[in-house]
Image 1 (cartoon, rainbow, N blue to C red):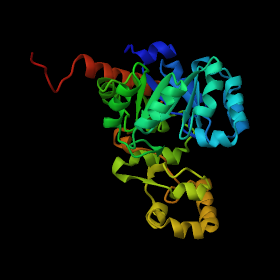
Image 2 (cartoon, one colour):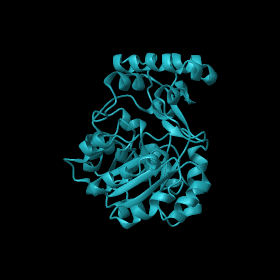
Image 3 (cartoon, one colour):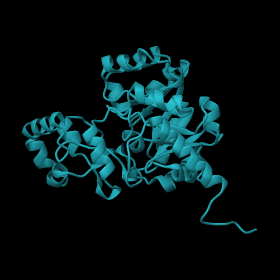
Image 4 (cartoon, one colour):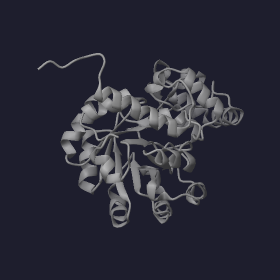
Length: 321
């Protein structure tokens, strides 16, 4: 076991969180991670009230969290009430101003986790009363900002102390967890590694494409936001595997907007048919470290084994005093 301020606050065995990936992190994945001693988060995503109610209906959410895209939650704030009614251990907000929701979360029994992409946002989340800060680097799959994980995490740790900080972005094995702890983080949050898990709601063909991919094949782009008709703020774009759509429109968004209806129809058909030369596989730079699709509980166990070995008995260096 690796005991940190994060494990103590959340009441978990291992300082490992599974990211609330929209459309991918359902109740089964969150429950499997929490059942293995980590902390799973259900992805509230773009605001499907019925889906969220379905995912939480049969679960003991006191051991789970629920995450929201903050700017989307602002368009349908009643979703927060749906989430809080499930009595989760924590609510996570990311990508937008958390202040309007902070008081309601803090008045509940849920802990308040804020994911941030800049030092300024970390300080704003601290001032809004967040209990835990997730510092997300641009290496992460899905939406993110421009700061890299390695320099962002210790800067956030220093700025918001004594709040626990969770590192996210480019971490998919025990070495990453060990490194994050050395940076001052109290744990890590992983998305891409759990995208490629048995309980992930990602289609099997998408998981296979991700396992076969590499961080070299990922890019940051807004192409798929246009195709899915999501009005993301300009500060955030999407890390995804490159494909024919990103090659064609990655630097020609004006052309894509001009032909959005036809291209969206083509994209939706590809999603339905599992054609990932056109549809999106949303994953991060850590794909090089992902080579299989095991159960989420085995992922947790493996990462903790690796991190413990790195910290207790490093094999590639010695410290001479």
